[in-house]
Image (cartoon, rainbow, N blue to C red; front, top):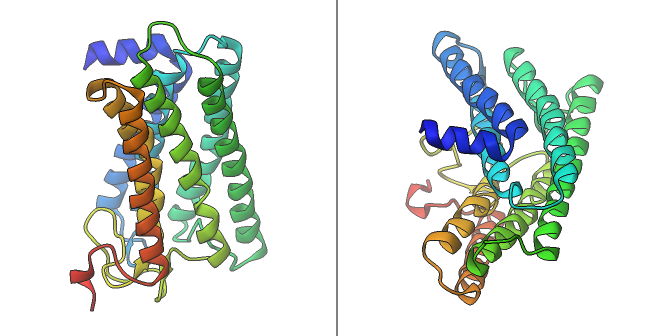
Length: 258
């Protein structure tokens, strides 16, 4: 583990450091979840920021690993610093609203809450668009000493991440992630995805984690780019099917319906 951390730090010190802060912060949120009683939508208010901190930690260490391969060091540094600024802003709102017992997303109950929600949307738009640009750099340049299969894994992993990150705007336009019922009903363990209705977070989550899954396949399993492209295509179709299922109001596991 220490070797992995040292390698991550040497590859991208900015994203490594911020990711470590997010990992520690997720632990703090879990402690707060255990000692506080404030709830939002039926679960402890600090569960959501804990999840966001974990997600940001994984993202930062993943992109820190990949961006080391790009020759445009100044652009990578600017992007890394941008991620820190944008996600600090985002996480501060998510955590602050949780501490107040309020929703951070889809909250337009007051002018101020609506402003915070809008600013979060703007910040994430910039963040996702910037990440798409990094993906473009991987399509434009071929890093030295990287297998074609792994390179295509990174390219397509970032592409799918961006596509399904933007799916978040579908939820924002509805001011909800549950389809067929209000947010906050019974959910699956850990994820809290709706057990009885459609949940747009399923495709959002699985699609974004193509950022890790597709490159891992390209590095450890695939021998040719074609194999990576086939997997990425199949993964895209699967997640799109899950999105369609959610839009139809059906839960991920139909057996939990009712």
